[in-house]
Length: 331
Image 1: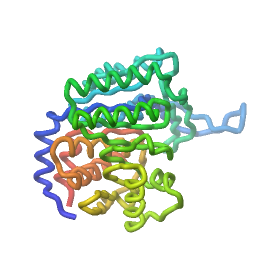
Image 2: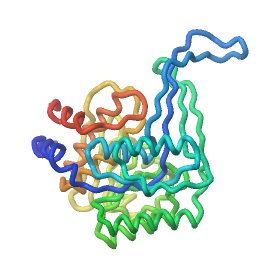
Image 3: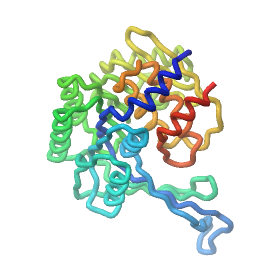
Image 4: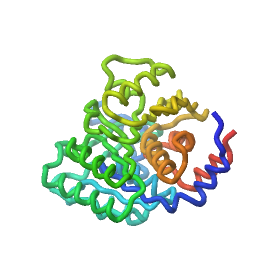
């Protein structure tokens, strides 16, 4: 496929800062302990990791917001966190990135935190601190009220980032989509699980191949013709308007109701870690469309941005400067 890279570069340089996007979903903190393994513990047959450094990053829907903010978008976030140290860590990071977090609602549950133990370049263990029960009606109403207020104040897009941790209930999703449509604001969904009825009416949905496969009645192969058929089945069954399917080494497929399908090959490179790549895709894709790019142009830009992320270890957010560079370097 051919796109006008000069147009995309101009968008990245001049138009992103005008776009206002709200991210709604499962807010997380990603914590990493990095070290080296040189011996086995005398206490039990397990490796000893000599920790040399630690790092905390924004994860889940917070990583979507992080991507948007680093690219220069006017970003706000809504979701849930606990009354704990991990929440304060999140809020400090939102502040540092200029992310409006007035939509973060505190409740008596742990802030979702993923702690990963890394030995060399190998993940050895992950510890999850979380409560995945669906949020109560009381908290759901507070979240929806905030979204409605944000829409009244002016938004160019809303992203629903569902990680299956309890924030994106059926009531929350359906009402947010309805409210957005009442205000003519497009909704982008990064789905989770197989209950996609709650995403009905979404303007764009961005499943990866595994997620697309899981929601279908029978498995499919990761080939162009099967992906298009699967996407159209999803569009018909769940009343989703457009599908951008991410397909690992096979790139992406953008399926639209009238314009047909466009398959975008991946940018050849070494892949270290796919963590957060889906967050980058929906961030850049939503940013592009809500900022005036055609869907195929936004998908192409998202594909380039994802190529930066998968070359990094751990959860990573692409910056505006990195996106400029990959646009000028691309063949």
